[in-house]
Image (tube, rainbow over all chains, first blue to last red):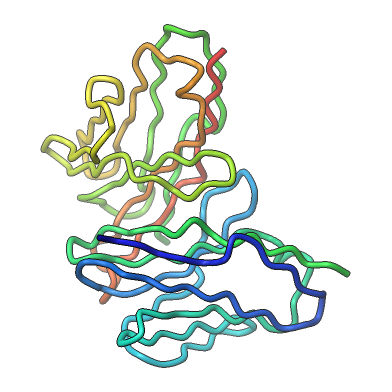
Length: 109
Length: 118
């Protein structure tokens, strides 16, 4: 079957660093995406990993280990505007996205 | 580039009426579009894959006659919720696959449509 797990909710402090983990089991694998979604809005693309390793993009970094079925999104220098849900999604062999339930990130001053 | 629009952004209708939601790729041609539904505090649920010029492929449990999808052109797909009922109230989001997005066939999302059925 196909399954994507990520924590339901996390809390962090402004200026700090937070790591959101995602584990997956999918049939076929064409990469893993991280999306940010603010309440009432559509998701916006953050990152894509298809090879093992770390991809860095400004304050956000994403890591993938295909052998472990594991990814994480690392957010540095947290800002209040980073409060949102972060969705992990894998792309299967048919190029369809399989979505995790999302992690609600709460940033406290 | 790669902008996807949806119209309307919000719609309130009476139970029993039909509602049409449009999804447009503004600056690229999308042979494949996707329709998602999202309940509060839940992840996106894929409803159907819309392919230009052919019938949509519906996910298991999604009623084809209830949610009519038409992808008549390379830049437009429509979702019609027929005989809407309060349980159809949800956030509907479309996405379009960019044909030349490199290795990963990235999907670009529309802003979503909030449907409320009274």
